[in-house]
Image (cartoon, rainbow over all chains, first blue to last red; front, side, top):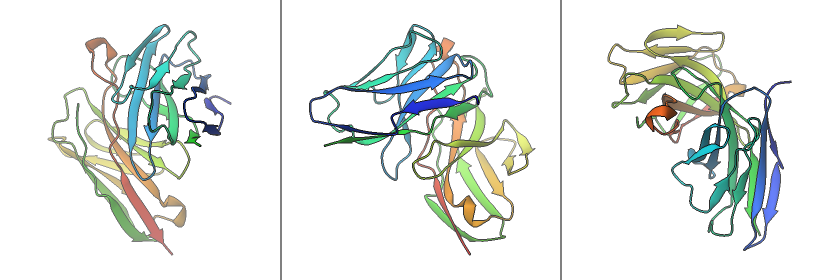
Length: 115
Length: 114
């Protein structure tokens, strides 16, 4: 089936550790995104990538890093510099970097909890 | 970047029609309007998208007035399974101009009662 796969679904991190959330898509989409969602809140954009080997900061990029070495993969690393990382993380992709009317497709999300 | 305003919550009963309005006063010429549905601990799911006038699909209708400064999502005959958060999203993906990607608002929490 085509879609976006995020792993793991649940992840626990100790203070001071870096963790990486995986995101893979087989939709052949050029653009990929990472959003953060806190309980009861909307989605906030962390990073996005228009094309392989290119990515841009979103609204809340501090304490996060990404890479886009392959079209289908866009992993997110939550570093120790992110002071409040406990949240629901959503990966998404869209079928074109340019133009209007493109739809964003989301993965099922990953819960990160700092213990 | 277009900012959206939606009601925080709405209540309805099964079988009723629900209309959720979103305000987007500074919508740009190239911006489309898209609505998503989200259940707890799941990714948002696309419902409908439009640019102007009216769009209808198998699950909803989207009404957009001529000035495009607002839009209304209409859900006919809701059921308990329609209880979810609904997001109005306005924007276009124009990375080449340096414009940032789509940004979501806080959404409308719809509660459907039996």
